[in-house]
Image 1 (cartoon, rainbow, N blue to C red):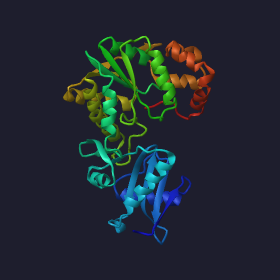
Image 2: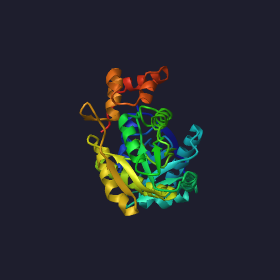
Image 3: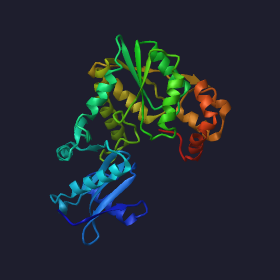
Image 4: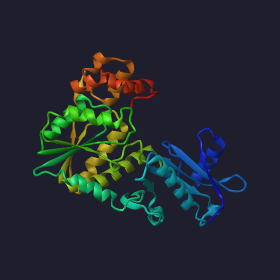
Length: 347
């Protein structure tokens, strides 16, 4: 066991971050934009020889100097990060790794959830975590034709409502999965509340938390994929592998998605879904966006209007249940956060 010390690295420590970036580059990866804890191990000359990081309940951005391979340093980094996560109260942990590193993490007690081609493996530290999630979902399985929607609803708009109404009218049961990661300007508790309120008139809708298995763009790792489009495509393929298992548990044979005329990310995502879902026996139906004021309704536009305080125009883009919430005192902290945000449009 080495005697090297592990220290937290702060955003202001440019010298150490530069060393970490160089170390990661040797592994063919770059430092992820979404990190909330970074640690490093130093040698006697105060040079960084190993590093690892966290974001939310994920572990990421690992690297060990080639001069210190085989000394068990990565094991110590992972152990340290797990202790940090446990102190935060995060007991259910996830990581993304290259195919070639999956065995190492299996030996540390992580279990494979899904993999994508030769790009990455998604793992968790619970042997039956994903299977238990599927078992809980299966309790809401219904007879007849079942379909699904996955939405972030940041916040819930007339566009989301139209998509839900369209899908619900074409099936016996519509399962709506609300992305439950709190990586959006509107928190999950509010987003789910608005989805429930905005679909309350649809008796065949069942609303689910996505849990940790339907992954948002914010928490999907970008650090070992070549470019932004590779990240989007990797995320989409991983999502579809996982979604196919969810669909099997609920006998879902169709997934509805909203047409995406503006967002590059969602546009590529929809394209891949249209190509790949039928291979798993799942129809992918792209629904044209509902329009208002001769423009497709989008949550980004709603957030822009909230930032400006334009509630008059806002009323044309959101259902009464969403507007009522946004005008309430309860919404004040959310609106304040949106107004303080530098960027509210997602591309």
